[in-house]
Length: 129
Image (cartoon, rainbow, N blue to C red; front, side):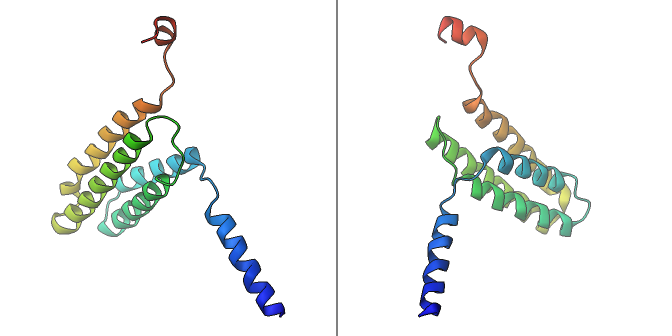
């Protein structure tokens, strides 16, 4: 009987923890660090470790609740993941220099999709643009 209670408690607690909202700000900071480590990697092993962590963190970001432009945000995250996987493939096939364009595309996508979540500027608020 105690065993059943323990198993039941384990499953309930696991379900509760799996549904917790992720802290997107912290996750994005960790994602940025993993990206930086991938860009600055000097060996393929370090690059693969960093890009794998980056991909996992971006995948985790997809679980967050986006209050504005949720569909576009998820689309952007999918594009980032695709570029990261391409960068990994190129790095493993041709070397780290071959991955640089895909890594640059990730940064461009970051800039583009972060604009969706920027607060409106003074003139936007004033003139309603």
